[in-house]
Image 1 (cartoon, one colour):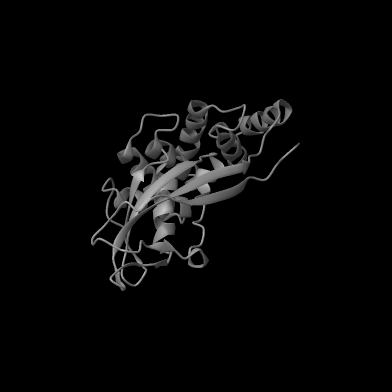
Image 2 (tube, rainbow, N blue to C red):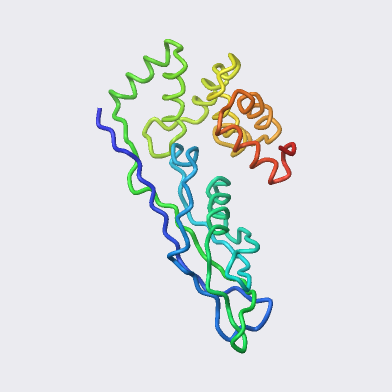
Length: 227
């Protein structure tokens, strides 16, 4: 089996200053040494999601990020939220007016790029299908993850959803979490945040970290119960 580990590369591109609360004589500037890369969400990585997120954010007089919003979505909620979380951890040199620091709005773009993605040949996928046919949870989950990845020749979200439904109905937390994500994002199924929440809840109660993050996302978007 020829397997390649997926590597994540995130580019941070500075765009123009979008606006300012005060007319600044010197615009705010990023202190790259204090701007760590955001963490690539595990669910997004395994699904092969990538894209560009444009953020607008308010830099305070002390250089901290006081507010951040998505001005241009990547099309993937996980990447959008991760970019917002990442920019909030950055520090900037504040804009100045008459030599004094003032708060101002900036605009930046995160570029989420998959340098490589695992590719499975026909023989390998055939082996995966045979293993999943036996009903072993790990084998079913592995095949479903491949079928949910656009980078794979075996890409087949509806088939993945069908298999995950059966496994989730048996109480498998990992399957509940992944199926919940499918409902949250409309991958292989019609988007349904209520159904996503119903799947995330038992998985989160069982300790699944992905499901817990899913509930937080839904709550933050006003589409789920408060955690």
